[in-house]
Image (tube, rainbow, N blue to C red; front, top):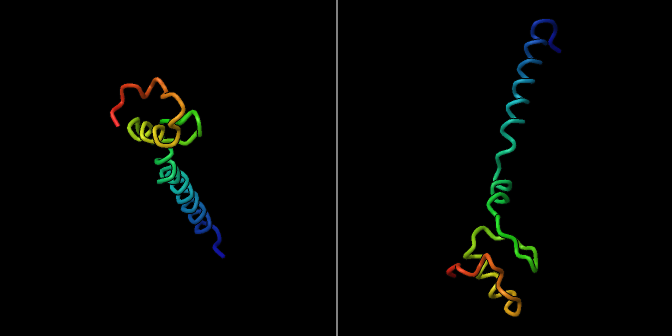
Length: 76
């Protein structure tokens, strides 16, 4: 076990390392992918990244439901 000055240095080094790990932890693929899914289907609540995909989904999965107003001018 370290004593005295070496112990203090070790604690400071560990605190700095933990702070860097905590700061860098919030930037991963899962959160980035979740942020990209901005369109949500009102019928089944699935999420899509862009209006083109949303319109394709709506036309194939919910053909009997009326098209939402935000998809009227979108080219599929």
